[in-house]
Image (cartoon, rainbow, N blue to C red; front, top):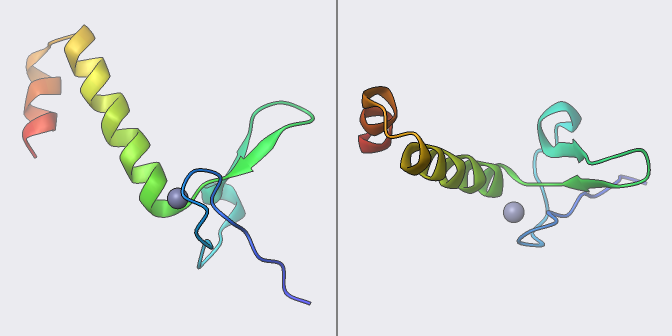
Length: 65
Ligand SMILES: [Zn+2]
């Protein structure tokens, strides 16, 4: 039986699943699987928030890309 992994955020099936990339360990008892698309969105949001908090030239340049 093949194990399937669903994204904790969008609930879509993660394909292909890579544990090192898609599996997030929160603590010893909790963990979540997140798909590539959601990881990309979270990273983008984080970059945007970081840039707003620390408006450096590097961050601004990064956001334009
Ligand atoms: Zn997702």
